[in-house]
Image (cartoon, rainbow, N blue to C red; front, side, top):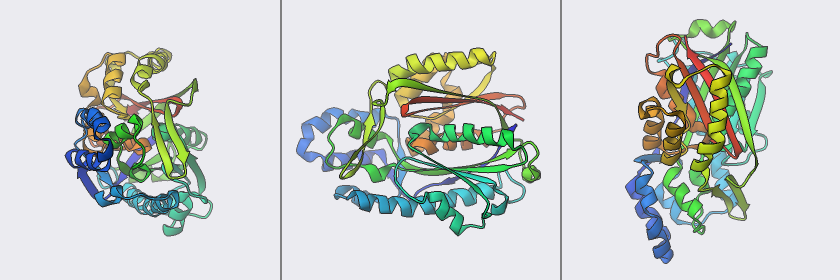
Amino acid sequence: MTYICSTGLGVPPNAIQQEEITELVQGIFRSSSRHITRLLPVFKNAEVATRQFVVNRDWFQADHSFKERNDLYQQHAVTTSLEAIDNCLANKTFLKKEVPYDAIDMILFVSSTGIATPSIDTYLYNQRDFRSDIKRMPLWGLGCAGGAIALSRAHDWITANPDKTALIVCCELCSLTFQRSDLKKSNIIGSALFGDGTAAVLLMGETSPYRSHLKTSPAKILHTSSRTKKHSTDVMGWDVTDQGLEVIFSRSIPSLVDSFWREHSSAFFKERELEEGMIHSYIAHPGGKKVLEAMEEVLETSKTKLKHSYHVLKNHGNMSSATVFYVLNEVMKEQNPAKAKSILSALGPGFSSELLLLEWT
């Protein structure tokens, strides 16, 4: 049994309202004003009110090399990840006593918005008192599904090692991938949706000695399920150019929720003998308003059960892999009834789907 015991966020300092971003994009792409004007409604329809970035608004108005972007990624990935880790291990909402760094047996670092070798987790290791025998699992390229997939892989490991403790860190700095010269629709839609964010989640096994540090009743992971669609590598991801990473964001994603994700979720419900009425809440990665609405339709559920996904989308935007942990953080702060069940879900490049069944203790 794997218990989700605490969360922590690393929120970048530069908050920009959606109206400001709309004006900024209009100014940057003024030479193609007719094309941009046609796409501007996406900013209003995205239901994003504000986002946070590691760079200020002036940064977007200049050109930047791949190296400059990646140097900033490495710098801010370390600072925001350390903030998330520190907040997670000392979160007074969930813990009555801080969990020491040397209690962590494995660290999983998830990201898709920059490159680092050695991976960022080594830099985190050097700045905090983690043990030298800590196990490391860096996961790159999983995009928006990364947080959910990392939960599943950590659950596999803890199931085999029930006395252990694991820490997942998801860090995505989407702003650093913005391309001033890219007029494709996917880049404009990305500009209306994506923000920066880092989150950490603390997991413990059934017999971990640190469970005595818990203040609140955690959720436990009961089951996980993964699906990847054949020949769908063009749905979302990166096109690597001389300038950096250009977003690939297909318009078919909502329709794939209605087909591919419907098949996966239906099979998951059937295998676990679940009915929609048995689910207390959905901890869904908010890929966008249309994606959440498509999920509601597939599940035949109410918007209320996805309220935290909508809340995070509105106040932070889509932060790729970290976003589902922001949603998890909000759900964990509620008084969830004992034995209530939640489903955590995320979609990502591949095209892939990850589902986890949680039960509140």
